[in-house]
Length: 193
Image (tube, rainbow, N blue to C red; front, side, top):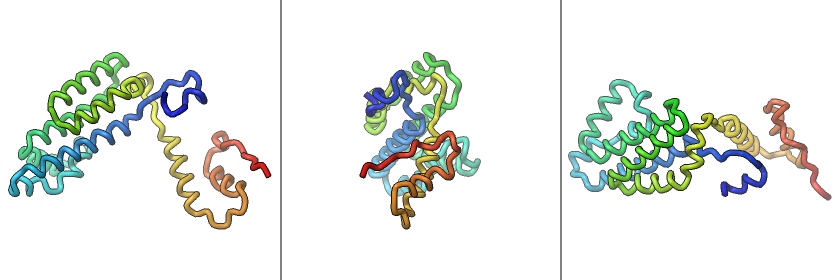
């Protein structure tokens, strides 16, 4: 199951978030970078200094100077270049308006390419992706996102960091509800005596 959601949300389709997928892939990219850095000579290692942020950012968000710097750094490690290119291809799959079946085929092709690299960090990510493939593929049904829920969770966390003066449950409950639109207010809870 997917965390007990089936019982509460009958008929709901579980969807794997694209951002969590990218997070897992960039973690794998970071592990690959660190592993490669340990095997390089000092001169090549100096060329890879400061590459971390360039690797995890979207290529299209880099300036021309940053792209040039990244390309020069990637020349010192073909494995890291392959890993980076796979990260960008994975992102492109989610940014392109594919039909559901075509997107699943693109993900399968991507996983085959990632496994073929022999890089253990990518293999770990592909195994995770395979375990959640159905949920991840469901993203392409209507491309949902949970930005609204994440925003509410952030507001609640910020409000709960300043709990001074709360003498009963209604007070934090009201503080949470105030910044939210009325239709999203959670039900009022009654504490039993």
